Image 1 (cartoon, rainbow, N blue to C red):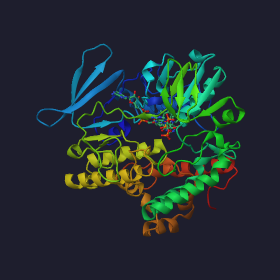
Image 2 (spheres, rainbow, N blue to C red; image 1 turned 30 degrees about the vertical axis):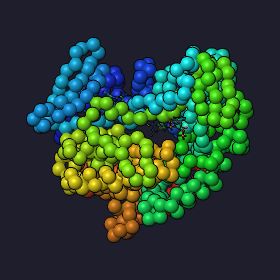
Image 3 (tube, protein in one colour; image 1 turned 180 degrees about the horizontal axis):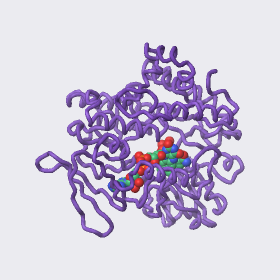
Image 4 (cartoon, rainbow, N blue to C red; image 1 turned 180 degrees about the vertical axis):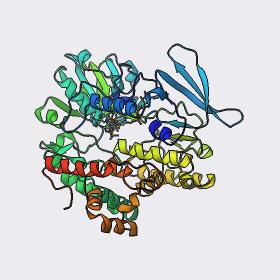
Length: 496
Ligand SMILES: Cc1cc2nc3c(=O)[nH]c(=O)nc-3n(C[C@H](O)[C@H](O)[C@H](O)COP(=O)(O)OP(=O)(O)OC[C@H]3O[C@@H](n4cnc5c(N)ncnc54)[C@H](O)[C@@H]3O)c2cc1C
Ligand SMILES: NC(=O)c1ccc[n+]([C@@H]2O[C@H](COP(=O)([O-])OP(=O)(O)OC[C@H]3O[C@@H](n4cnc5c(N)ncnc54)[C@H](OP(=O)(O)O)[C@@H]3O)[C@@H](O)[C@H]2O)c1
C-alpha cells in the first residue's frame, strides 16, 4: 500500500509496531503479535518464513520505502478532528507518552489475523494446566514430555502438531466437525497451479448464475479429489467427513497432520464439551481425558478493530442470523461516511486471488479512487449503504448453510471485476468480450498463457490502461514463469 500510494504521488507514511517490515512474516518474540514461525518445516517450492521476510526487506529497500516507515510505533486509535477535516491518530512508541498526529487520509493495513479467537468452554477457569492460543506458541521446548490437546484442525494445527509430536508424550487433536484433507502438493505438483485465470472466471460465473449447483459441484469435486490429496487412507474414526463446503470456508492444508493420525502418534477427539476438574476435559461424545498438561487453541484469528471505533456495525435480520455483528464497509473496504479518506483492509474478502498479488491490486484500486482516476467506482452514500445491507443479507444466507462460515466473504463475481476496474489492471482483455477476442487475435500466445497458464501477479501490470503503471518486464516474466513451471512439473498447465 505504501509503495503504491507513494508511486501515485501521495506523501504517505506507515506506522509499524514491529521493528522491521514483513508483517506477520517478520518473526516476533512478542506473544501478542501473530507471527509465522521460523522453526517450521518448509515445503518444496514454497517459501519459508525467512524467505518471505527477506523478500519484503528487499522490496522495501528497492522502492525506497524504509525512510517512510516509522517502526516500533503502534497506532492506538484514529478519529476525526472536531472540524471533521482531518484524521487524528494516537500513536505510541516505546515508553513515550501518546502523541497525536494529523493526516488527510488513512488506510488500515494492520492485518486481518492480528487478534486470537479464543473459545470459552464451561469450567475452563478451573483448569490448572497450560492454556494458550497458538498466537503465543513459539516452539515445542516447554511441552517436553507433556500430554497435549490441540484444538482445531486447520493450517495452524498443521504447523504446531509436527513441531510438538517428537517432544510431547501424547498429542490429541480435538475438532468439532470434519475438515477437507487438502494438501499443497498433488502428485508432486502444487495444487494452486490448477487455478488459472479462466477457471477462476468460470467459477465466479457459476457462483453468480447457479449458486446451489455451484456449491454442489464444488462439494462433489472435493469428495472426489480428497482421497488423492490426503496421501494416506482416510480412517472414518477421524471424522473428517462430512467435509465443510469449499464455497463457505477455506480449507487448511493437512498433509503434515494426517500421517500422524494414520500412525497413531496423533489421536482425533471430538470437540470439547467442558473442562471438568483441574486437568480433565470432557468431549462431545462423553469421553473424558485426564491429566492433560496443556491445551493449545489453534482456533484461528480475527482483525483487531480497536483502532477504528468509528466504523459502524450492524446485524442482518434475515435467514435466522444470530452471528456476530458485521462492520459496515463498502466493498469490504470503505466506511461510507468517510469513503474519500479512509479504507480498512481488515476483512479478508475470503476467496480472493492469492494473497500477495491481491494486496497489490487492492492498493492500486484504493489509490486510484482517491487520486481521482477511478473515483467513479464509489457511488453515493445511500447506494453504498444499500450495497452493504444487501451483502450482509447474502452473508446471512450463507451463514444459514454453515454458521462457522467466514463473515468477511464477498460476492466474488462483483467484487473482483470492481477491484480490477478500479485498479485499472486491464483484465477485461482476458474475457469473452470483444476486447478479449481482439487480444487473442493480436497475441494468441500471451492470451493463452494469461488465461490458461500460471496465474501470476505480473498479469496485473501487463496491459496499458492509463490507470496505473505497467511493468516493462511483465511479458518476459509471464513467459519465463510459465516455462519454468512447464519444465518443473509433470502436468500440462498451459495450452500450446
Ligand atoms: C501463521 C500464518 C501463516 C499464513 N500463511 C499464509 C500463506 O502461506 N499464504 C498466504 O497467502 N497467506 C498466509 N497467511 C495469511 C496472512 O494474513 C497473509 O499472508 C499476510 O501476512 C497478510 O498481510 P497483511 O499485511 O494484511 O497483515 P500482516 O502480515 O498481519 O501485517 C500487519 C502488520 O501491521 C502491524 N500492526 C498491527 N496492528 C498495528 C497497530 N495498531 N499499529 C501499528 N502496527 C500494527 C503488525 O505488527 C504487522 O506487522 C498466513 C497467516 C498466518 C496467521
Ligand atoms: N502455513 C500456512 O499456510 C499457514 C499456517 C498457519 C496459518 N495460516 C493462515 O492463518 C489463518 C488461520 O489459520 P488457523 O488454522 O489458525 O485457523 P482457521 O483456518 O480459521 O481454523 C480454525 C480451526 O479451529 C476450529 N475452531 C474455530 N473456533 C472454534 C471453537 N470455538 N471451538 C472449536 N473449534 C474451533 C475451526 O473449526 P470449524 O471448522 O468447526 O470452525 C478450525 O478447525 C488462515 O488464513 C490460514 O490460511 C496459514
